[in-house]
Image (cartoon, rainbow, N blue to C red; front, side):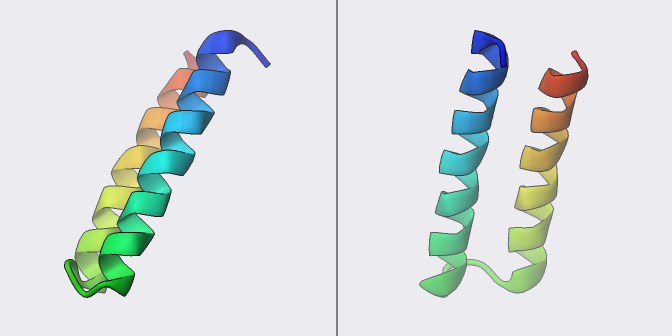
Length: 50
């Protein structure tokens, strides 16, 4: 795995954890959490397909 992809995976995991934490703490509803996760997945996919 290239360094850029490793960074992208690390960023994705950090951001995904933040979304789960916000959801579990009641700061966002399920629809908002899924929307944010979808955005993070798209960013990771773009970096992978790059």
